[in-house]
Every structure is written in structure tokens, then in C-alpha cells.
Image (cartoon, rainbow, N blue to C red; front, side):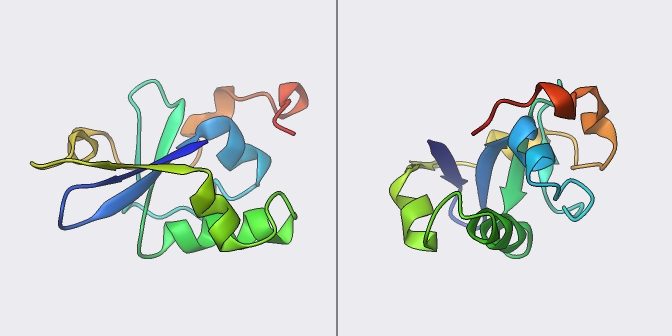
Length: 106
């Protein structure tokens, strides 16, 4: 299950960093996305990085269609500026603590 956050002017999909690494898109995510301070969660911005995520998750046949992904997504609207804007920008390499050999995503 995923969470899509929006604050009226922008949106982000909340994804575990383990999934980002599993999909091998960690070096493709732009500085317009954010990550939690413990580097365990990525917040993929809706304009570019969300497409990268969708393309890869469909390519790997984890879901059959983009609609299948949305069907597994909870929408969370923030009436004010989302807390995500106060998080550090996504930075490739910060996820190095994730041991790819230990991933048990699917």
C-alpha cells in the first residue's frame, strides 16, 4: 500500500527506500523529491519521479497497470503546506545502508 500526499499545489508518492533501491531507480530520482531524515522513506514528486517509479514498477510486472498502483494507494490531502516540504531533498547515495541482499520486497 502506498500513500499519495498533496497539499493543493504539489503531490508526492510515499515509497519505502527499500523499494526504491529494489527497483534500482535510486540514481534516477531528482532533487525535486524528498526523503525522510532517517533515509528510510522517499517522497517521489509527481511531475518526473513518479513517472520513473511507475515505469519501473510496470516494467518489472509488479503491477499490471498504473491504475493497479493507484488502487493500492491511499490519498492524503494536507490543507496547509505538506510536512514533506520541510524534509531533506532526495540525494542518491543516502540509501546505501539498505543491503540489497537483504531485500525481501516481493
